[in-house]
Image (cartoon, rainbow, N blue to C red; front, top):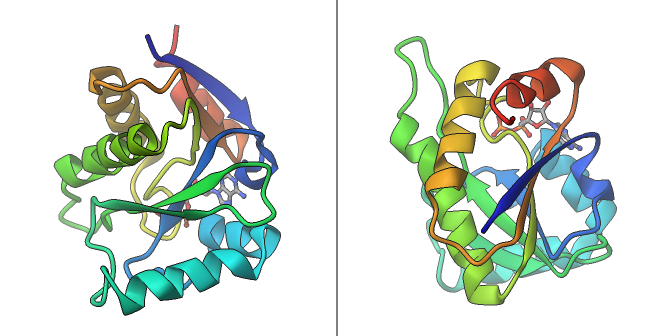
Length: 169
Ligand code: ADP
């Protein structure tokens, strides 16, 4: 049974087995959550990402997929990088956003992670409306067949926290 918890705060400050990064497909860093994770986690994470680019992920990580690296100096064992879909004027593909959560939990299971912290993937630079992204995230986690015991959504501001809180009883 997976318990969903909500925290308002900074995902790089969480003590969990795995921290999920809202990465971009280059895996080589960016702004938002990605920048914060690399800043606080230190260079070991980027070194691992570069190794992935030199081996299994030569073309980068496709949208909706996930891959793990060390967590460097974060208080976690792994960072699971996932690439959310971009929300455009015509909308975004919700199945790809759901896939980020499902694939991240699949990687967490392969690693043996029991506590996993997620940001609200795609709701920053990628522009997905928070309420809709929150619904997709919570539904995807509830539908997942996973041994992860705690999924912790870490929301950066009050409105993000409220959007998730409305869905979690
Ligand atoms: P994306 O490119 O997938 O949209 P972003 O990192 O730009 O990813 O933003 C995703 C969400 O994470 C946004 O709601 C943003 O406010 C939030 N966010 C940014 N920094 C942090 C942080 N340190 N911890 C938790 N959430 C964060």
